[in-house]
Length: 211
Image (cartoon, rainbow, N blue to C red; front, side):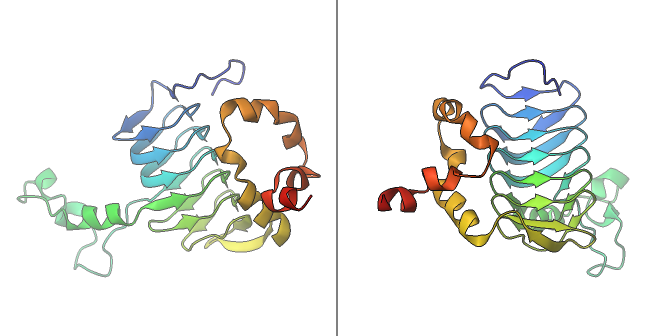
């Protein structure tokens, strides 16, 4: 990824990456060696490099580090006598028509990533998992269950370590929903993003309405 040049509203996709049947938002960036399929990537989110993402809905302002995988293929290890994909990708081996039921099952178990989520290097998010707004997934984590907003998780399997902010601050950020602000408003208020101090007091609609 090139940090020396400004992005345009039009998505940027590295020529070594493959993007198939995806919706990419404004100011999004796909780095080298990525593969995305049937995925929605929200405004300002980026995939740094070597990401493998399929059947996922990703919010705005998400930071996806190198090597992250979303919705990796599950093998039917306890459902069929063989877990190899020859039992459903039959045409590949000359065994007749494909069995689409496994692919359909995987497509229905979409990964859902909220806004302002950071996925660390080589993290794996399993199918059907939802990660809330503002969460952090540590490097190398394997996430098998939902992650609450603003939780920090890590490990194999991933477990909650702490929260990014206290409950009141997290709730205020959820009400502010700064990720939905238009581009010009973000530019106008960019200095306020340099510290959490005073941010919620200034922009939380509940607090603003009580003044």
